[in-house]
Length: 246
Length: 246
Image 1 (cartoon, rainbow over the protein chains, first blue to last red):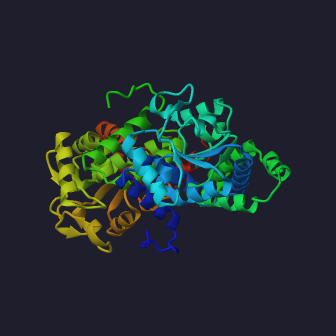
Image 2 (image 1 turned 180 degrees about the horizontal axis):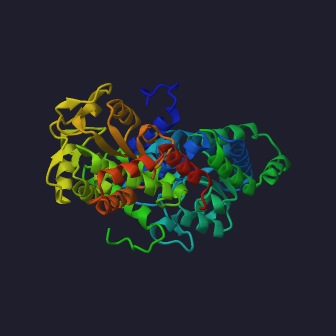
Image 3 (image 1 turned 120 degrees about the horizontal axis):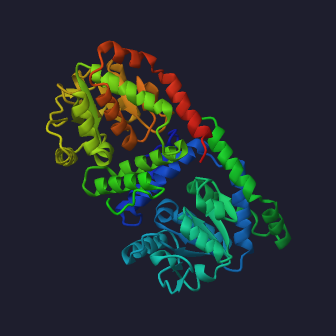
């Protein structure tokens, strides 16, 4: 990672690829995660590889949701763990949220590798190893969650999430915050707060907003949430992808 | 592969991913190829996962170029070998072209694995193992080609090609045919015939055009080439990506 010069015009893209490749090598990231990341990188390219204003609004609203929540949980899959392990730990600390590992291709080995990786990046409590509850209306391994984690959470951040799972979580009446670079895919379409941004920019920015809002009272946080319009955010992201300068 | 139902709405995307994943497992495809394929799949999604009319024109013009060539060569990298091995063999047969393996991340082991894979799919003569010539103005391993292959070819098909290499080949005054799903990337931008289409649709369609044009005389082939406008093809692909129905 130190070999990539920060002033390289493709710095973010190279960094992202490098982290995902390391994730696959370490057994954290599934091979399909490399494909998903490539797909995301094309949308990021069309977005201009920048946090557009509506994404910044979404990140601020998401931070407000996490701060207001009784039981916020940040869901971690293989790509999230590879790309932003320390950044997720920071966001959890800034918002009082739990970290829970949740995988599309769940194996005990991958769960363990990700838990160890998160601990190396400063996590103390990692959920998702118990898997003693199930999300209704979802098949197989993907339904597995912790009873005292995602299952009873009121606000969940699910970055880079599969559409079926995003829908099933939504039906559980949770407030769902989604990070996804394709505004047209199902996960952001069902989210309460769709964040159309690269996760490596989005998560640190959410943490900054959370720190800035740490002393805000409930009415201020509620006002930020009220002011956020999910339809506008999705539309502006699509417009940028359709018409942005390249 | 037989497990993916052909009437699945995401059939092509699933098939492509599956083939690339198998390619990585077999040592044919580099891990970065999975990323590149994911990136391509996003552009294909925006294109509507269809061969647009200007891409069909490009495929017909490319077939005419291959038929008119004195020494046409089809370049094969790890993604091409994983995605369309038999289809490239068919195209080579229909146009009298040579097949030459050419890798961005070149190792003897991968070269051998790809040669064996192509032979399993019907190839008899596979070039790229000698590597006894160099493309000028190109670093490292990527410059390596066969003297009696790409080095002396007058027409080359380079699908899913790296921009540096596409530029260096172009400077050798070859007629360059490029398949790439991003019309804005360097390879199609420098190509004589930019084909903005998914390789799994493009190659069989080029073969069909080549078979249909097998008995055409030189003037007919030249007229097809003359009628093709690369600027229009690039523009129409970008317009479709920007404004297509999804």
